[in-house]
Image (cartoon, rainbow, N blue to C red; front, side, top):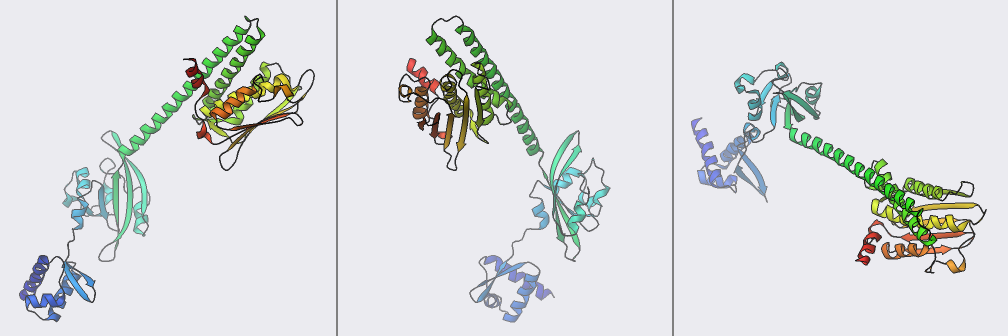
Length: 410
């Protein structure tokens, strides 16, 4: 027996000196033993897990196994790990778990996990999770644990294992995710506060713009020049369109997207009412189903449509004439927008075509479309007037007109 042990140790020493591995023939020659004896000893060492074998071409090469004990691996992690048998008794526990319990390992081995009080140990036996793992199914869950006046959040995993004797067991792995959970909660709270702040900003901007619009409205009563009154009123309407966009964002659950159908419905209704037009004179509707735009583009479209809708109100239905008006926005699969204002009025006279510099509203529309949206505008006069504006996606907006105008004044 002692000779066998000595020869086994010699084989391991030899393999330790040759990390690339040796064949049975090479080992038998080095140790001056028969090939069959060498093969027998290597088989014993391989069965014990002390050597490993790999095939290179037709030869088998044996190397010394470099396996780290399970207990050493468990000590490399900060996660809490405990191995339980089929009766949920502790079989193995890592240093992190022992440090949590503050009890010597010898006193823990063999103790049932459910015998610990909730203030000493996270509730691993909650529900049927460990027992489900005993049946061969991995289970994951979140476990809150109250200790020392605070709540520790664990992400728990119950992994089924099989011991050498074939008996089932469970490995419970608890990862402390308290910081991550608290960070997520703080982030959620910060987002809620940010959303509330953005809503408050939109609310105050809306109120401020409405005050400015009201001041301009009052100023028109002091003016006698019709051209000046029209200019002030046009400015008032554009400011009002900005206020309505902020109002939509204030009401919306998405603080950066304007729901265009609701926005344009309120804008058109406000313009109609501001000119005292009855619902019998102009029957109107807005169609922009599911269309949402970021604030800058929505306000831009508000500028366009304010000009076009006011044109319809002022010129499409003179005297006692009545008719229909439709405001619509469509978007195709390529992201191209089509904005349409259609009426059944008298049409645009020859001297008021869109190319004319004196056309009320339409030169402004052409400027906004071509210079800032890089889009196209088309006008049809068959059975009324249809103005169609087409432009690419939301990224094509060059710069807001306010900035350009202010630059031109400096």
